[in-house]
Image (cartoon, helix red, strand yellow):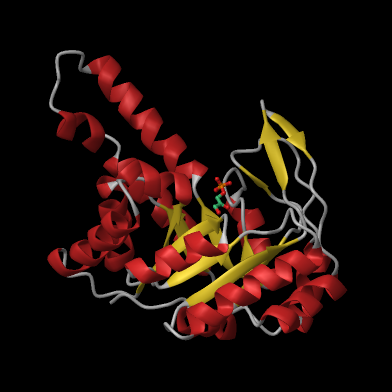
Length: 278
Ligand code: 13P
């Protein structure tokens, strides 16, 4: 069933578990993730960035794709369709109008007051449509040409105030992770996560979950993270499998066979992350 993320995250928070957000890029990604999460009987958040939405054709295409797959594949588990890193109030509204059940407005690179004002606008619109809202505070590090550009972690005070000021349903505080597969030592502030989990009344989201050892993800969960976002690790696993298949099967031209050569890799990656709740 398609739901917003409120109940699934609050349930997970109560049980000390994590709900995974996996980014989708196309029909095949969506199908593999839905099938695996349904098989494992775990709720899932399908994250879609604005660029992935553009790639797939638009907000309505994405919403109808997800709605239709849930029906045709007879998916029983709870599924949330989430706009990942929405860049403007308008794009969040567009997603809500198309049938997304959750949106993130990322104004983390803007001054605090502007972040609060824009996110509050989205919260107001979302509440009227039973849609959940995530927002980000602090600035995350970025991988640029394989070099880490450090971000600035949020402070406990700012994060508490931000949640009060905006009334968001979940918050992504920067705590030391970066987007992409960062191979060096990361400086995740577990103490900050613990303090945030004690003081912030809504579920905490960890962006940049790829490239992190399962033990690190578990430690984040134990410190108080409720939602973990994974994108690059699935892309990495899929592309390695497809590359290997193409090299070994140069005569194959059927795109279903080529693209399909990476399905097991997508599903195995999804399952390996979900394992941290065991
Ligand atoms: P990764 O690519 O590091 O998994 O980050 C995903 C993410 O945070 C999407 O919002």
